[in-house]
Length: 280
Length: 325
Image 1 (cartoon, each protein chain N blue to C red):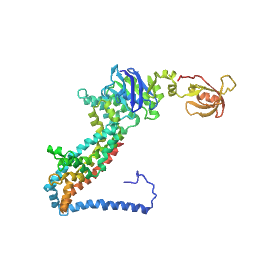
Image 2: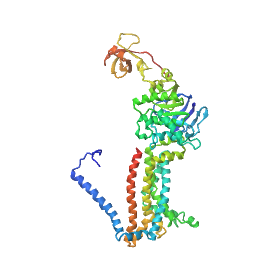
Image 3: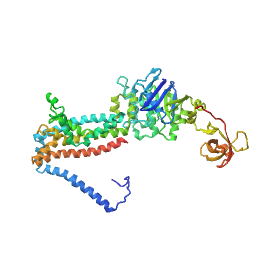
Image 4: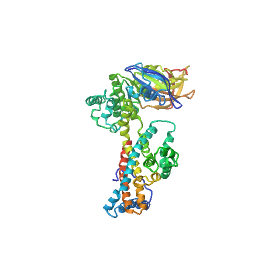
């Protein structure tokens, strides 16, 4: 980056203060973030490529990966639909309870994931409110895949809506009105005007939502029951391996999640840049 | 096509935006809705377009009731105050939008679309800029694209919300004349909203002056200017000053050096002189009541009188008006 075009901030701090602060920030970042991330990969490949490959292709690992992908594949599209609907309602209509809806959307961010998981156990579990009713009909939600999907949807609910609301607010509804007056149907308006305007923001929300769905541990841990090969997602599988002192395998599987994290970070940067462009 | 609005009422929450508004715009007429901000003129325009619905009252296009018709069925052209161009589409695609979203049976083919958009680009004198995006255009160019986009669907009526509001003074005057010429060419009933009386009086065939959700007066520009219905209209259409309890236009105040005594003579001292512009603005203070009165005199008269601040003069009103309240 060149010095030209960069805003010069008036400095009042002494030179040594600046250097101490910068070294502190860089030092802590390396110590707490870069080193642990590097350690994951070093541990994962400690016993060589073949052992890593065996750990991630072993049957239970494969089933965990498949389950995680499936849960994400259900949770993300659902939250795209919910997020779009919520953002649309909040930014395009004035109605009673609008602020309440805004607050409700944020609840999953505020509640500990473990509590989120417990909520579903309380509602759908064998001793829960709907437990007997579900048992009569032979429907199992807790300690089964539906519970994992529900918990994941709950935890990742705010990502898409939270990203779209400020974007749609700043863009206003005039372009949509223009489309309608020009004869567009609601669907044509959405597809040709709304969606192109929010696509980068939407994608940003999808990336965050995907990363969180793949990596969610707390809520899923409560509802899953940790049944190997059946209700274990990637993070739960890592925990089991680790608890069995199978460090290399644990880190090998964990390295997959770390790659997801790094890719997410890169995508996030690109999309942030694109959304800022769309907002102006 | 004629537009008729009958007894429209509209409230937003507890705020009455429109209170029993009725008006008629004849086919081929260029009609101005003039009023200060908050007078309800934009709401009325949006109701005509179908972007809002009235609480009561009806809208008729060519005597046909369109009150319940959806915006997309009304075939109106609407030019938004901030243009509302589709930011991710080129100028060409913006103009073509209304044609591309038509149902398959009535949608023109690609060749016809190209031809039609080309004609419109020529009409707005932007032929070389078809591939640009809205963000690469100046305010005046965006305004013209917004107009072309509205015209592409061959609207039965054209509605414009503060069409020149966001432009600088020179571009404004140019576009104003251009719009008038364009209207004479197309001859489609058009309604535009403005808060600028000069704009309304210069461009429109007829004007409706609005205040607090009501129409105060409707008529041709000369008609409303020369015989205003009330003090609000009088004051809104031009500057005014109060003289002997009556309303006077500043250019109807006469200033003279003749300060001899007379039965109706009013004496005053010059407070302020603003001599930049076609007319010279003079502010005087009456000797007897201390009231401040605004006057405008020609530059010639100003030189003749050789006025200075502090001079002692006599004043009189050529025309004045009394409005019953």
